Picture (cartoon, rainbow, N blue to C red):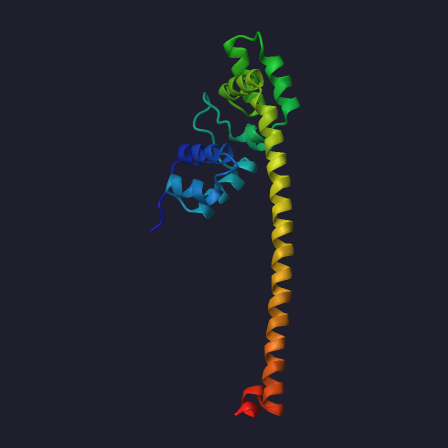
Amino acid sequence: MSQKYTEGFKIQAVEKALNRSPEISLTEMANTLGISRSALQRWITQSKNHQLETISANAPSLVPTMTEKEKRPQDWSLEERLKLIIKSDGLSEEDRNKLCRSQGIFAHHIDEWKQQFIIGTVASSESKKQVTVKSLRDEIKELNKDLNRKNKALAETAALLVLKKKVNAIWGSDEDSLL
């Protein structure tokens, strides 16, 4: 018997799935919510096609806005983040929330981005990621070289053993002639 979920639950599940961090897979998110991955994927598709209804007319969901933009908060470039921080600076709380809704993000994202710019962790974390990726690629390249060298040495050793057995079978071993 399949379980029936309310529209509100579906909308919240889609919002959580679209706002998840890149480290969390869609399957993990579905397991966290206690639903199947296919159901969550179907709901996301429905929200993109505007087939999920809003909870009420007075409280529209963020799903259509977010899916129209097709952009999660972590997908914003540094330049876009800075522009939005500057744009939102000096706005009233209501206007700021309205701006956030139009961009498909939450006000706390702007606060986090502002803190990151103040501390300087955004640029350093981006450069650290690039350095890490480059070092990992170099390490993979070195490991592949080493693996290929060892495979060739192993193949050569196996060939020598086979040849030695054949020579011993044809000519006899040196130990036999000594006896």
